[in-house]
Image 1 (cartoon, one colour):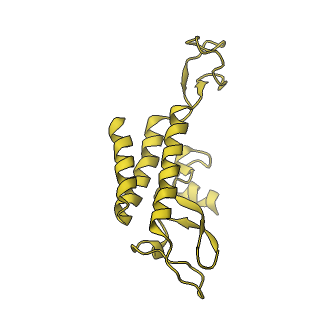
Image 2 (tube, rainbow, N blue to C red; image 1 turned 30 degrees about the vertical axis):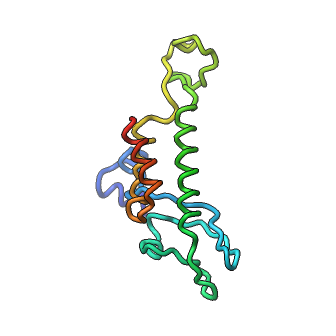
Length: 154
C-alpha cells in the first residue's frame, strides 16, 4: 500500500522524501516512580495530554497521588547536564571512513579525511530546546535557567 501511494505522488520508495520524520520533538522521562504506590512509568512530557496541566498525577486508578515536582525537575536537570557533558566529550569521526579519531595530535585521518563531531550542534541545540519548552510549560524555573544558559553559550 505504501509503495502504491508513493507511486501516486511520484516519489521513489527509498527517496529521502519517503522517509518518516517525526513532526513533533518529544522527550520521555524514564522510570518515574510514584512515592505512594511504587508504580513505575515512563512519561512522555510533550505528547501526553494528562501531563499538560501543572499537577502530574499517578496514572494508577486506585492511586492518583501527585508526583513530586521537585524530583521531576531534578531528574530533568540531571539529564540536561549529562547530555551537555556528553556533547562536550563526544568523539570526533572521520567524514570519509567513519573511524573514531584515535590520535590527539593529527588533524586528518589516515585515509585523508577530515574529522567532525559525532553529534552536530544543531541536533544538540534542538534537544535542548525541547527541554526548554518543557521547563517553560511546566514552570520549572531552575531547569529553565540551566537550559537557557546552555543555549546562550552556543
